[in-house]
Length: 262
Image 1: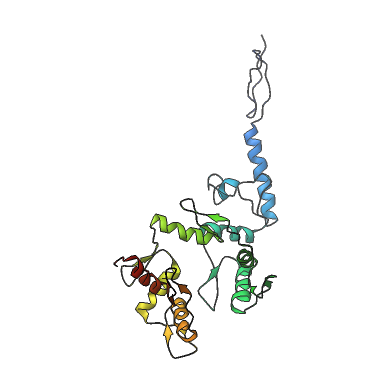
Image 2 (image 1 turned 180 degrees about the vertical axis):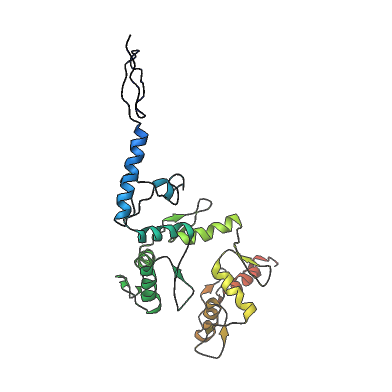
């Protein structure tokens, strides 16, 4: 019987519940795509740039030349998009003219200049007279008063006030020494130790005694030296009455009691 009417380009036959009923079906994907393109076009006209979630995280989908539409999430302007991309590229265009530090944000550079080079320390400890340039440094400092050590080693009983101290400590278990001297074959577990070591090559001695003309390459060596002026001997033998200005000297002395040979 019936004469089938020609289908328009966007009409498709669809079987439902076993009946050969003819439905006019529009491709939802096509409509969705058109809607997305329309939204993106409107956003671009307003100077807004929309970026697909996958592009931010997995970098899949949404071609780099045509950012896809986010479901409710977007960067409201091109500036924020540029700043975000620096988290992926590692770009730090703002350099300090007083030191080697660089920053992703201009505000971070301003904060660095104000706190580091101006000497400004707006955060004050209410337990002592110390002041700090950053709130998180004050927070860590407060643990010296409370005794709190929230970071614990999984391999031994040691605990630490700072996560960075725990990270360094873990290298005593792993043997990791990521900091290498470019003048010799020595490697170090801490950047500060490498920095001190480099002075054995350069001859630099930045720590000066204010009681005499001697200078030292490390602050710890200066501390030990100052005891020659003060007479302080903080290391006491628990086997006799002798006291020493250096831990290493006490260690050597203890062998006289134990009979141990070096």
